[in-house]
Image 1 (cartoon, helix red, strand yellow):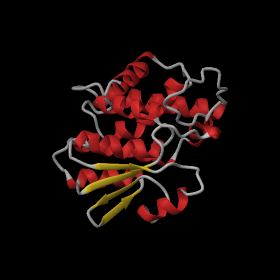
Image 2 (spheres, helix red, strand yellow):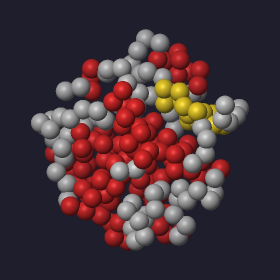
Image 3 (cartoon, one colour):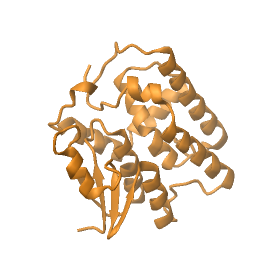
Image 4 (tube, one colour):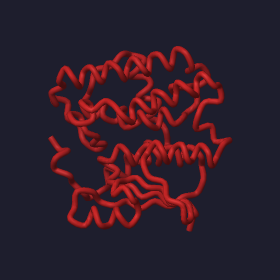
Length: 217
């Protein structure tokens, strides 16, 4: 059994769980994972066994518990300083942290109106002006990061970083709802989805038996 265990929500729907799981995959360290089905009568008491906030994901490192997606990613970057989870360049690292924090705290219309559903396709889902504004902001972030820092790789700061992990669920949303994107944004989505870890997550999502009706349209 690995020292690291991450407790996740349903892989088909849990955008917050995907983020630190991708960071763990990027590090390449051995870890165990436990999926706790969400929106079931037993979900809350089960989650409380693993996460003091009552939310997932939660990372257990031996007796140490870290919860919240971005906090877990930061903990992993601290614990594995040679993993490259943040860019080496100070300016790039500052921007990567800023755009990661913006995703963590913002984009409420995009989250609520276009929830993550990896295995489904809903091309006719209406997109409100508020959600469209969020989509445009995401594309602006991607465009700026790629132009300023993207040399040397296919991701926002060249090599894969926590910033890419934070935006990976948005990539799945854009595919699920067939959102029309700028060409460079579309290419970035292709790069994220081509990751072996993303393909592994998507395969697991497709094989999950759990259905959350509120996220099926």
